[in-house]
Image 1 (cartoon, rainbow, N blue to C red):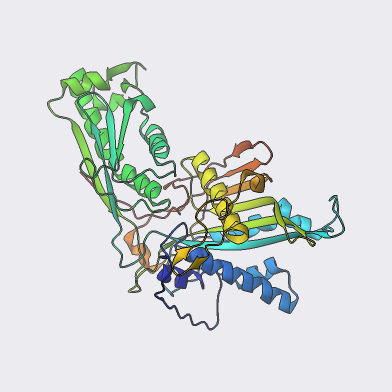
Image 2 (cartoon, one colour):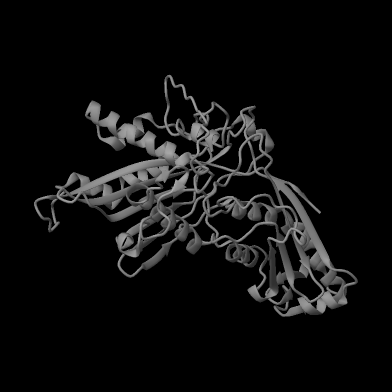
Length: 445
């Protein structure tokens, strides 16, 4: 956590001179473990507050002040390390600048608002940068396995765990879209270390990105074995066959040549392919330094009651440049859920301790956001296409090109959702919140 906070407190902007000192202190209070941001959220919260104060001190628009000072695609990472070059930061800045909420700042804050004299409307925005993976010097391996089992099921095995991030649904979608299988053809096995390969940690959106990478490496060898066995059984040239829902299909006739269950019965042993991979890291010796970064911008409109001090969030806009999204519903849930947690951290939650004990022991006294606090419109724009910048030193590992996502939003009251996806050309990676920039190749057997 301390490494992550140190890295992210100088993450977004170019500094002529900067010195960061990080201190870990042992206390009698509760442990400070990593959770949804790993210390980066708190560091960037402080950094963005300072950017607003600096802009105000020189009389500049705070968003323009950020643009003048933020890093470009050609700049190194926070520790001076070579990183994956992307225009994600510039794209989320521009998207926020064009958002309907931010443009309201040019009008009177009271225009169209039925406000009492002691109430005020405010609009604010912030940038976010997040390092993906565990970073240099920390083992970050992964892998997975595909098999046609004796009962005819295509079994996908990974050592991740489902903890609310939509992992199983995302894996199913990737298998259906990439291989052409039907959902009923699949059996997904996760979590049981006796039955699955070592896939590394299920940290954040890491599982989605590493599953995509593993499936990318498994697709060619597994499909080749599957079609070769089907060709032997059916007596057809392998070039005429393709995997599809329910079995292997004949490209010429359009008919199903053989079902997976029948094929599995005819085999002497199951078809099994396994692969190993790892998260990319920068060419550096700084422990914890990252190679991949995703970016986001948040714009929020609030109402402040000058008599009671109550603050109410009226609407939100989030632009996220994190690469292609495999599961749009899961992605939207992640961003909306994160915004709800941020609202709780900023306005409601307070973990007060005395003599090493928490004073609040239930949700009557420890307040978290309720549905009434989250009923304003929320718009989420997912930026999928992240054009590649220049060449970095670490690119000698032959990483793939970048991708981009589209746009979706929810407008409050009873949730109304629509998804506007812009096609991502040359899509090479997919994640619910992890940037797409990978080396080619990899081991599959």
